[in-house]
Length: 505
Image (tube, rainbow, N blue to C red):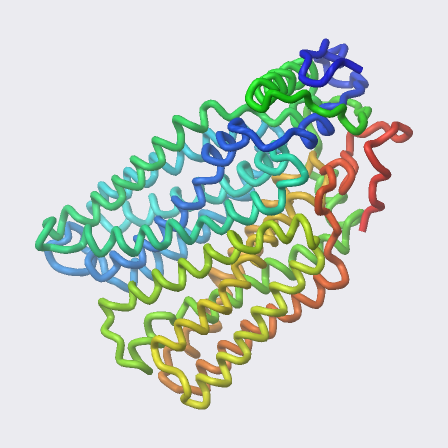
């Protein structure tokens, strides 16, 4: 074994597919201390969730302005919040599945550059809209790029971040969506003020600022490497070894300490592609319990969020006479609570453990939402106290929702990772963006207290059900290597592992 931090001679002997290689790359990545290099990965990859939050919030807030005469676009508010929103959701679902397959086949880096490029182009062209059909088309393509980002980015992050930090980093990154939501709310207030900018210009500049932020992220992202785990499985073992050796050298120079020896090796049969049938069979036949867990987590959080947020403005205006132009301030407060949940609780997913924290956040948020429903039904809440209740619910629910992405990105074999993320994301997004609005639109918009209470209870009930599923099926993945949690499909059958792989569940 070479000394820690020393550049190793590549262990892979062939670039061709079909070669059998033994490598310690996963163990070497997992035993790295946190460093500036890891911050580069987080900033380059993780900040896209801020863009997504900015996008969704901005479009919702500019709907009324776009419908006004003089906006430069002949479109109704209902078309923006209905047709355009549905197309964005549909684009995200299709994009996740399409790019998820390509990410597993062609690599993480190639796809996370392509998807961000598509997002930037589509957002810029949305800002140039002159007809409704143009606006709808590029809202779909913007969602298409964002959906692809979820698959490419989550898989890359999990494969580059050390196992000791994977849970908290993943949760905080997914929770940063809500920082974008806060920014979108405040940016809309400024950019839509006709005393500052003309009505036909402000909303266009809002999209332009999103593009500018995306370009900055793209510049940082260019320096994020391909996943070494993906490289060594796909016949590029020497490249993976050289990349990890370079990172080890940087970390050693930064810390001034030698790295501990890696915990073990893995032997794999290199191959360039895994067929879709193999991926589907692996996820559904070999890991049915984990598949059930992923579906429960995604559907539960999707319905809880729709129960609260779909009729958010209508509830405040109808029941508490909050002016429509002031609901954005309440939303900003709720968005901050959403981000604070993963930020404060993320570390516990790596220390207390996945199962108690996932089930605890799901069940806890459900109990709080049931309590909120009871108080609302009894007429004991004001706009301020209802918002406080929502903040408490979403403080836990946001950590739980983020852990859903963490779960599906780490409990399936590496060769299926991006596609698994894409599948569960698409199911959750479809449930939230299609079934949710169909169910909650009439309930929260009727003006009847009992209907809104029922909406809250439906969301809370599905979240509680997901929490119960997690209590029994959640995988204790904390501080464990990805290869230990789910043995790669390419692994040689009788090869020593860093630890005994868990049996498929």
